[in-house]
Image (cartoon, rainbow, N blue to C red; front, side, top):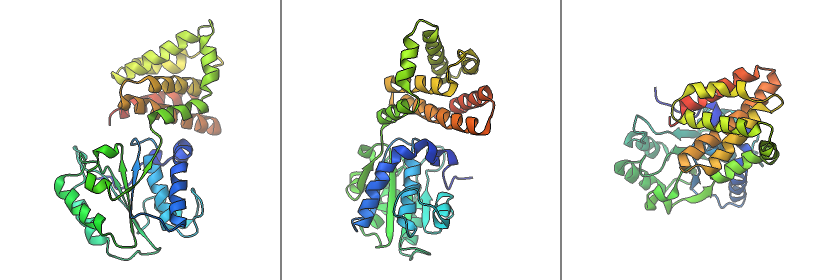
Length: 303
């Protein structure tokens, strides 16, 4: 079964909201000044807030009375759940993760139709880079992008604008989301990394704790589950467990040699912070929740 909307974790405002809000504010200003483009290119790493930004942008463009990001109401709820008739998502399909010519033809055929409820119809196209969009699909999409109906807005998602075909890129207004370095800095603030760093410098075994976590996360990239399972049980008493591991992940993300590794480590840090809040609110078992988070992260590496 092909995915038609994004998982809740990708649309988690608690995790990604602060990172994407500036881009939403810029889009809102353009809307209010009647300078809204027909095509917006959201540039940022997949899975690190980009999907949330796209859906919340659709809320601002589709639902009446939205004067600020994160508005509520029945219309907003339906957009966020993928149930609004005027908001469509186009996601890559198959093992090669491509957007097919059939998907593009659906856009071309449907775009002239008037909105069902509001003033606009919004298409979110996830993965507009040339690697996801074949020549035939790109040519078909370009036709509707060149002369879009007045009521249509396209929100196109890409990790790298240089990988987008120039003929498509030139017809978009670009909104850049935080890159990996900015994301790691944001998580460093959330995890009180400076304070943890001071603690790690002390000669009280904390250095060994950091090295143990780093070794376990590096082993996780190599498929070694045993080292990850040790982490929750090897943390010293008094150390904030989720924040400690998240801080190490943030530090490793900032040092990562590859962008992909940095994104995976940033994703882990975000997940740990979100799980920590949920664990505290529901009084869940800390070690069990951390084990689940670490194993889920390893399972999803490169997925």
